[in-house]
Length: 631
Image (tube, rainbow, N blue to C red; front, side, top):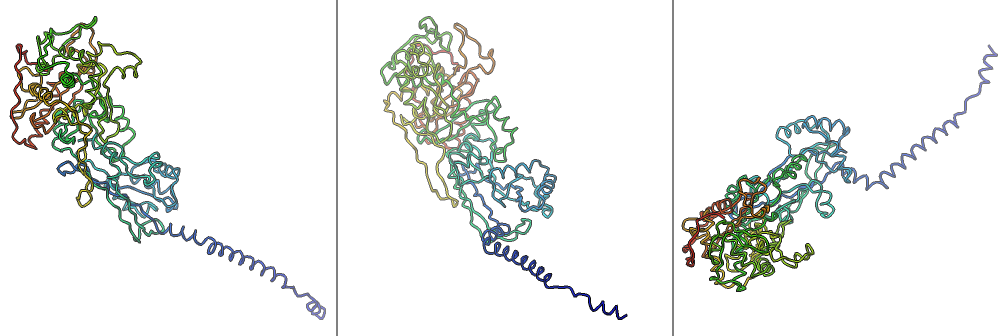
């Protein structure tokens, strides 16, 4: 027992000091690391982390401005804006982005949402920047998205303005369309952002700066899954200014309806100002499909359509003017004294030049004929002779002076200039000399000659108003949101042609008889009580073989002639000038003439003339009148 007690007393007590010291060192090291981390986070990284926290809690939403409205000349709306619903996602707000995307795709019935997010990231999307993953949502999709909001962290509904063309394809080529900005657009336009609308074509493009307005923004607070809690402050957007056009809605409707399903174009202009009253190009397209986001298949269908619905034939279609060009010959010949009103030529139905016969459209010919009746009946032989006397260079000089073969200056992209040949032009173009026989074709508006419908409309206006060549315009004024005019577009004079008044009176009197005389070629445009001055034209598409006279109906449609009709009225104080072409329609008097008549009748219904005088009497003819035929 005593031995056991001794052993108990002799056992050594453990030393705790070193262990406590080691534990204390560990604790102090942990505290030091924590303190260092806190110092790093709260002092060194304070500003960066505070900004990140704010970006997670506070978002800046950009509010695109409403585009300006577009009105016709009587302030009737043509283009406005309607709301469009979009699904947007902030990927950083979704704990499991893959699951959220799968739910959203199933809910909306769409696919490939993840690719849109990847594309946005590839384009340098900042953190917490929302990505539009579905556009133009239908109402059931909107309801489904809103009712499942808690299951879709980071997803929200966004309402954006969408361009709306009230009359679908009406005046589509003039109004144009909008589309989403591209990366190429962003490179040159730093004020735009991905998803913004921009004018791509027509008026929408040429007046983009006026229509666009200034974007605004909102600073909002969101919860952990990106749902909006409250708005902190707002910078309101400034809507774009509105455009008042020069076209008349009713006249535009009439023009397009009159052309119908045929391919063609019509331009109606005020000859005293150069303002466009109507500009129709058919076939057309619906610009709303671009505002809604055109699909690749729809775009391919439009661009591969053989009827070329995207082409504005009024300014981009170039055609031989046919016999409408004889107005140029007549003015040039009278002003250069190459012929007089009493100059007479014999038309047997054709003329031999070199070893080839150049035929008149009237097989039996017109007999002895002077300038007035040559215009009325559109005698080709008379103008072959005139062309030989003038020469191609003098014809070209007068054609250019009247606005043919060069761009008109209208504020639309991709206007074509056409061609008015001359000796210098052929040398530059083909490195060949000009042959005298080629002048005969030019004299009747064939050969190398090509013009646009707009150019011929402006030529008709110049003849109508006495020699003033205006620049065509389709905008009358720009209005602010409250309706006050902030900019006006007065007429622009491009040049004054010093044409002898007697020359113009003689040409205009013949143009009146084209419609009103029994042997005229333009009876289809006759309007009771109003003197219409006009000229028909038939533009050859393919050259016939020597000696052949193929019936028009025997040719395939694509080889048939184009029909032209130019006119102005009332003849004594013109208010409207028109050029119309119907492709592959044959004789201009019977195809384009009725179209022009419908447009003029609608114009005078809308704007009745004040005391029109009867047509000027025609000079006495020295030979028996021919049977009335359309040219």
